[in-house]
Length: 141
Image (cartoon, rainbow, N blue to C red):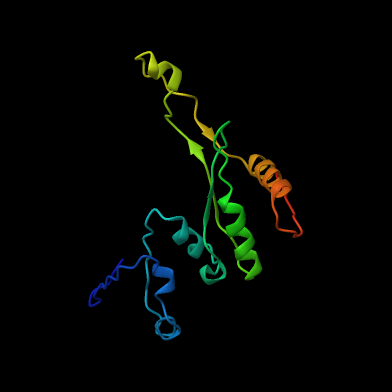
């Protein structure tokens, strides 16, 4: 809320929490941040330091014929540089049932949200077949 005589100023930024300098903060400017729908903005808003994060990865549900494992190498690369990795876990919402779709009916599967335990199992499976000899710690809840 602005008081009489105050002029609002707007600044657009992908990451507004990174736009405030020390000089700006020392002037005691009233700031209201309106976040975009971005996980990176949420990390910054929580006080975590974005510059300590390496490349983010997506971890998807495996199928019988598709088991992408490129995320594992990216996590290892980030770790070797002393960086954290943001892991985006797969969700399946409003996925059509392929068998029913072939019959001309649109029937959707139940929504699925990947859990940390599922990621732990996937990561352990990949680690067993990985050529990288490194310490592996997997914690699930």
